[in-house]
Length: 180
Image (tube, rainbow, N blue to C red; front, top):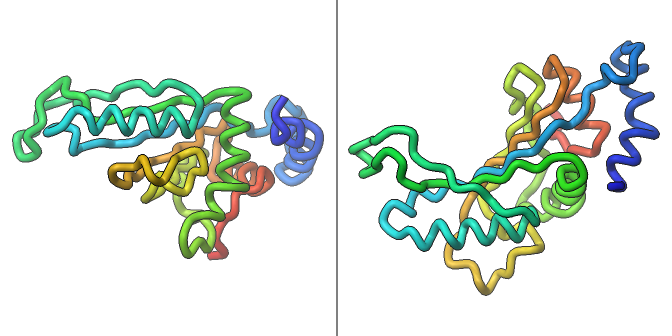
């Protein structure tokens, strides 16, 4: 079992029950999944760029990414329907907690001029989305083998019904929020 999951079960659930006034411990908010999405719009001209993005995402997560395809054609971007333009990974259970632990304790402190993540990036339903400009903050990526830096979106999906519940959950799990 993951170190963070063990902490969640033993310490965080009782604290959140007290803080949020929840009687049933099964109603306490929890992490459901983490989705990492790496867009590769330049793969329209060169499909090999998508392969490098795919291998980097696989190194970061330890799971094989799925190729995302364009839903519709956009002539201004020279994009055709069904063309491969992104790759994404959905992490659940053990891998999700291990990735979240690495994200909070190793990756985010390595971001240049890091002052904390924004507390305003919730979607209104208890999910949090975080954008990273560079994949080199992950220690699994070899700096010498990177052709170009790519950004990625990390969406943390929780079972919380409101943003306040999700904020309390992520704060207890160690997410370094910026002081507003």
